[in-house]
Length: 447
Image 1 (cartoon, rainbow, N blue to C red):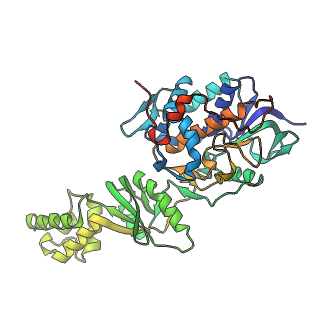
Image 2 (image 1 turned 180 degrees about the horizontal axis):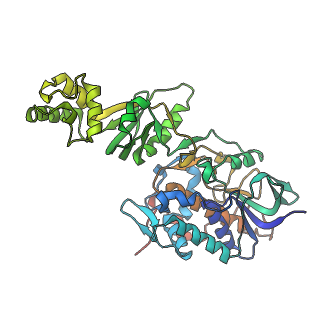
Image 3 (image 1 turned 30 degrees about the vertical axis):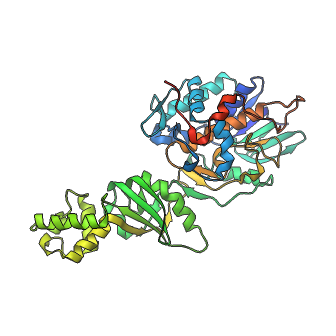
């Protein structure tokens, strides 16, 4: 005898799963819907987003902010752009506020309030939360789908939404279970890599700089070719580099380091916002103005003192007690090269435990982009991070989670013309005006 029966079972109580459950109920309130979560409580990873503030979305979201099979996203992102997501959250009692860079946060400034509002909305709609239900298998059972938990419990459902997320942050719920469930149904999965993650360098080069940060540009190069640049905070750690700008570049590093030909991957740090020639001129003038100043303080006032001392040691083999007047033009050129573009080899990344998102995942070719429905397993839908789709920092990954969850939830709840439930081929665009909202033209709500 089965322990549980639902019209729609959502496997995974993260962002996309909770949104999918709400969307399904709102589309068809008569349905019995249950969320099956392997942890003791839903939404644990959501609590950690945006440094505890929950970066809900970004009004500037565009295709350029995503990687992987981004063409697949267009339908869902067109119908559920940031404006629609923000309006949806207002109906749940969460009032979004837009910051200057387009990032959207709840007015409360608390990720916990976002999760509370989602759970309260689920409870008000009678959606069940079944926690500590770790799905081990998903298989056909006649006209229904059977979800079997590791502890032997079973749930039967007419339709199933797989929303377990990726492999990041295992302590917060990340796992490879969703990929295994879908592979068993015949779906293909690309290699998965940690993204939005810290980078590793030779520890000896950065250990003296642990805790120091600067705001500036950082480039990522593969075999000497510039792939991408970012501007923002760069933080030195005992193992390498962190900070928002570094995290944005980490996907490039992860992908390159995973290649079979093992290319050289390097980060170029622009400590000063000047060209090398401009930096040489600045240092030459500084040498003339401060001839008696010891090298240990030669860069004090320009950069962090410890960072300056480290770069001077790399550029010129002189004791730090030596006066600046002893610096030769060659020393100044070497120091200017480091300040304008210090190059550090990247030897690896931190793992999935520290990563914010999984790069790679389920191939989208066997899914309907309008409904998120599997073409191989009718009645099964997939959302969010499980796909071979990932975004940059700034609310873009949550935007995809909400949009894909809304698309899957509405599709799973919609009956076909004959009254039966199935994948369906009809358009899911209920409001024709929404079709005008392209992914590159997401806009904030009207004041």
